Image (cartoon, rainbow, N blue to C red; front, side, top):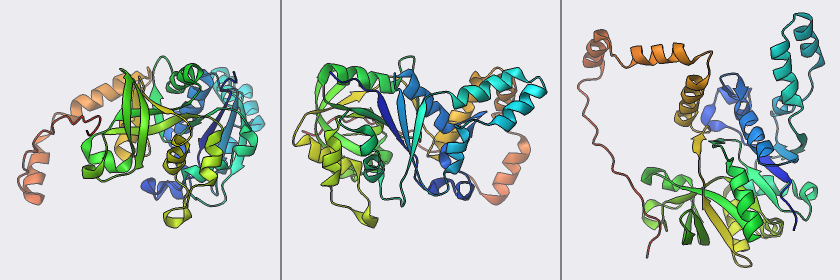
Length: 319
């Protein structure tokens, strides 16, 4: 049985939701306190037993390569100034894992980005971790998928229940439940309208694939803008072998979304001993609204209507 030793992190996207900041900085390098988003994704791969990592980059992504590279001048400066703790942090970054970089010359979709890694992956199972998603759990999400792959010898994707208003942003599965947290996928639909969605169980940015996914992606018809969608490749693979969906354990942050990114910053800051007390004090002040705010709102915005609380929405499958 071939173990999952390799992983792909697609990082060639344009990051348009964070413009203009991402005009000069890769979205994967946006900081969460003192580390960029992509470092947490790389660390999850390592903690899951990955030994060989392929990061698929594009134009304007050189900062990712520089970040994980050695930095002799910086290391010498820190050593000369006695900043040994910071020096160790910098050195640890460059020695995390064996990283290879492959260029996606134009943004032609997630499926195309994964195809760029085919020669390096070869005839082995492999993991895919999207750089936008940070998932935290004592057992890493990717390891959960690898453990299931080891048991089933089939592709496994991570899923979670998504809010009704976000269904059209996800690949949504129709599946048969085989255990409390595991589905056998019957179909997957890319970004359906709410009324057409087979469930509210959405695929998120963690996968373990058999190598047959490459051939399926090669037979995928490009969509709008010539993009090759991973979901279409998964649908083709379903014709030849079972694919499973795992409702993973852990807390997920969608850092490709502004609100999700800010949530991650707040939570990480509250866990950091250097920032925790200051952030708690700030949040305490922020939630006590100064009277002047009320005055300004009444002058510029009028009276706000109270929003009705939204009910929880959970539909696993349509009959």
